[in-house]
Image (cartoon, rainbow, N blue to C red; front, side, top):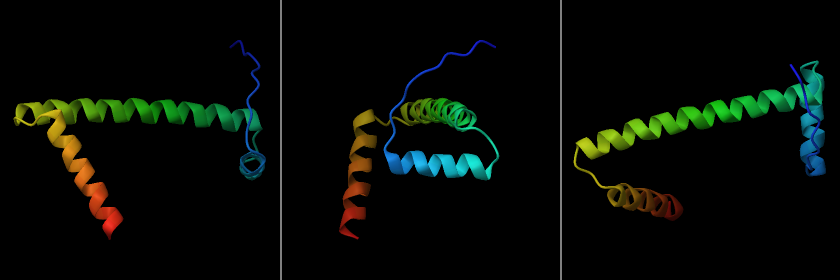
Length: 82
């Protein structure tokens, strides 16, 4: 597999934490970052699939996108109040 080197900036504290984690797992910083990127993309894909299913079910039940948005706003409002 061909690899390409990229430059990425990190806050110093995050870089130190990342290096500690890589050391604990006996792996390189690059290996850790590759896995983190793969996991991020897999999670985003799964979330997108879940959202698609939920949106389809909501449409079948007769709900509109603005209904869901107002419910989310209400939950957030209640959490702040609590």
